Length: 82
Image (cartoon, rainbow, N blue to C red):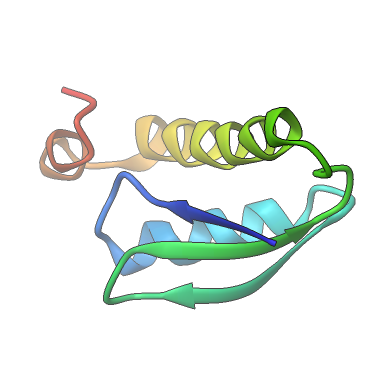
């Protein structure tokens, strides 16, 4: 299990990122916490600290691609991308 704090505080991007992450073989979103902006995922091949950080970075990269694709300026600023 890994916990990933999303850059955006938007419920839409939290949910959409979670959905996209479930398309990756070996990962399942176990919980999404709206109040904290956290996704909790069960991932395979995350037995070492390096593998955990790689999985966490993959989720954050997915969120960033999604934000750049359809995020409004305000959402991008809130996520620290502008």
